Length: 213
Image 1 (cartoon, rainbow, N blue to C red):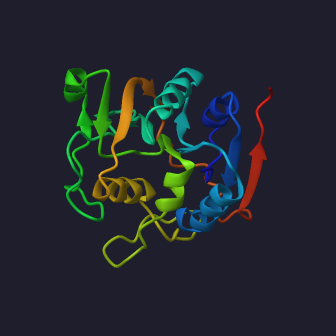
Image 2 (cartoon, rainbow, N blue to C red):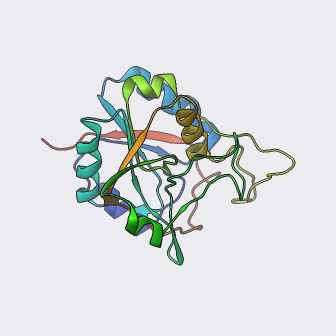
């Protein structure tokens, strides 16, 4: 997902030794058919999603790919923001079908220290969210629509339509009793930069970069 041009994030993403499908200048709502078509039209064993305001490492990616060998849904994780001492994981069930301030207990650093090296999370936050192809077909990328209670932010003079794809997927997997497994070594730094948007400045586009052998 690439709605921003964050130099340090682009550099980190480009360094990963994996095929990369760039979905540039899309809103989350616009991504629904794009992701679904890509999964349907290709035959990778696993598909991994990551947000473009992160700075991932090959080491974290390798851990997630190792997890994917024995788990149909797994994930890396990130800090909520550079100053927020919580991670986008939850060892407790999500409380509601749609996100709110009280619907998810994001994992505090002190709780994280008590977890085993590998553990189940009920939330995956697009920090190397990984599922097998069959699972992406059963639980495709979906967002919540904008509504009167959640109007979202205005970007480049317009309001994107759709939000919280991470919670949407997490809740559907929870309802289906499909565990999401993470590993403490799969950390992805989240710089949480909220500027440099290319949304509405250019036409949405996609590009597949195939990794060198």
